[in-house]
Image (cartoon, rainbow, N blue to C red; front, side, top):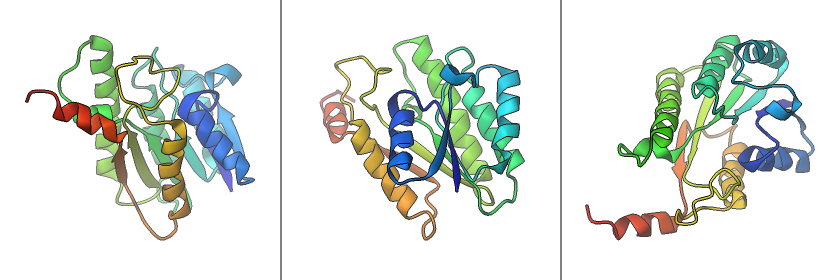
Length: 192
């Protein structure tokens, strides 16, 4: 089984990469750092050609230069792998799409881009390839530096991912949202 991960040099992607390496899978990292910038349309097109013979894509990389790049890769790989039963795309989305109001424009743009992914997966998840939308809340990585936001550890994220991976042959979980429990406690303390 050949597994591809976009953005596997840091954060969640690195943890997923290490997870598969620990289990002895053939796993490849396609990241900006090794020449695969999904924000570059030409590189993204080349990546879809490169991934044709892979079995699993972890669509993790997010480009700050092109907020729609992850969505465009999701659409392209869905088309490339259309009706292939042995293919799986795990899309790393975000719980941010559950919210409507944002403190800044960057968060709003990020949420809109992730919402496109949510909607695409909902619309196209009834056939093959298998589409799984993983929507974590805040994860403690170098990308999320706000000390006031409750964050889960990357190991907690991997615990949920492990459940999805180990049960992929028996269960189809199209969409899963999870967060650090203290996040709920924090919302309980906010006046509604």
